[in-house]
Length: 413
Ligand code: AMP
Ligand code: MG
Image 1 (cartoon, rainbow, N blue to C red):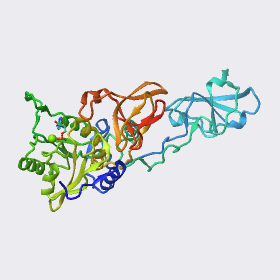
Image 2: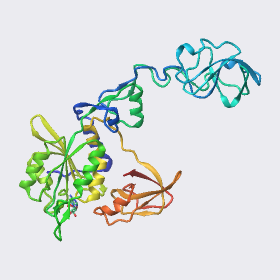
Image 3: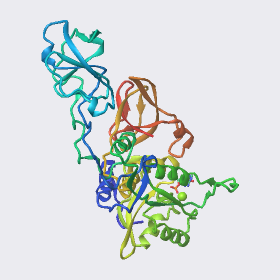
């Protein structure tokens, strides 16, 4: 056991991880094709090579007019041309004078002189003239040049995880390739004498290794590259060898062996390796025995580790709550706070107070009428219940009873 066990509140434990995560240096970079860039972390900001929009853009099909011309109604204007999207510059009327209008399409450049676009719905056209039945404000239905972004401004920041909108911005800046951070390698070490590989026929008291697989998914989702190590028995020598192997990666995640049992040896072996412990527990359920620390295996190389409790739901929850922000930082991502969203509780919750709980739950309903309820479960070993859940309900440590109809915080899963 570490000399002092350090059990923190959920919030303190999370903040401690965030503080360490803020100090890690980002990984090396690589160029990827834009189509392969979704969910990668941007290493070089995307800068706009032109104003967006590059010309005053009409947002409607209609007529470009001088708004001051529309005083009495219906207002008759002389039609002097038509501008479609992509119209060549020489075909755009040079100036719209008093009493004139130009037919214009969505996405087309508004000609000089005009200061508004009237929607086609409020007009009728006849023999070279257009009649307008409604007034428009100056600037109505026009996005001015550069209003969305100026040439040379940053469209997507370094450290952003690319998504549909960011990829669209990169495309609009003409980037067919983007520079992103390389994925960090995350070693996964599962421990336990009872745990066997999934290709082995388990004996009557053996359990197939599922944690390495849920973690591999979570690691990939967070942007890392999982490296699955062999299963470690509850035996210090072999455990130590495998840990040393794991510390060669950018982050080491261990599962099991961190509780108070006689054969929970992970912390003891970490002590032998002179690891630093930042916390050895958090007041949460599931996942109370979670361990966070750092180990120096070579003078120039320190690696963070998490000892995640072996119960499968505890492993999943503690990854999400603690390992994920560290992994995101190792991916080069800018830090983000954990935020819960609220949903209406469908049926009451009774729990023993004292721990902050993250309980598998199901958010149902449709459109604005969503509601959430606990999924019945057999505790933190119940993967089947968790697979039926689509979120966790977050129960604060001081609540014993939450009545139906209350709004409760949830964490999506
Ligand atoms: P431990 O944290 O080592 O005390 O393990 C807690 C529970 O989780 C025990 O019931 C273990 O059998 C189970 N467990 C530990 N590791 C795994 C794993 N890799 N896959 C599935 N179950 C596991
Ligand atoms: Mg164990």
